Amino acid sequence: MATVKASASALITRVSNLQTRLRLFSQCTIQKAPRLLGAEVTHSLPLDFDAHHWEEWNGPLALSVDGQITSFLGDLTGREIPQTSLFLSQISLAHGGLGLLNASARAIPDFVLTMTMAMRHASQGFHINQDLALCWLHLTVQDLYRCVSNPNILILQRFELLLLPITEVACGPRCPGNERANPLLTKTSNNSARGRLQGHCSKGLIDALYAHLGDTLHVHHMSSLLSPYMAYGLPTHSHVSQQPIPLAT
Image (cartoon, rainbow, N blue to C red):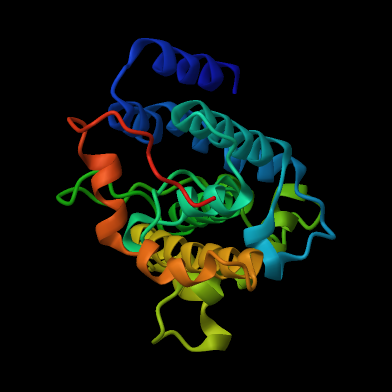
């Protein structure tokens, strides 16, 4: 995160256009963090974690990412960033937010989907080229990914804990509820699964935003603010007036 922080500081000092700063931060700077989020879950998720609330994972790295986003937006707008603005910044573009990284909701899906693909290749082999035969791993390597053969491996225990709650969202509606783990492990596209998980988490942030606002004076503005037409211009257009970017307060 030290590299992310240094890069964010450089954006503030070297890039004068506010929209360009925001785009570079969302597309480049903060994207240095996601590759580590799944690794944090791999090594530190407690086995008594409530897997049915996997979207609320708050490991040290996830909290650090949220802090960096809050700090950057504060420097960008010249004002203190409240929790409502953080929610708005992490809601997807399709749902009217800024689409910034939601580390808490990204970490566990990254871990589960990476493990899923590893297990799929271990059991089904690798397609190096469509004209070549499958490349199969040695049986001893395949066995490393079997929970039955390795009941004391913490990484596999964490995977088993998280698999079913993730499949409830990641698999399509046609998958029977009691059989969703098998399609995710054998054939469900990673891109499709990730898209469903991201949409689910974005809607969860909208619910959290409304719950946080309660009956405040600002709540009646949310339906107009949470529109894709309000958000798409912010990260995609860089040659605009350098006025402070409006965020909910």
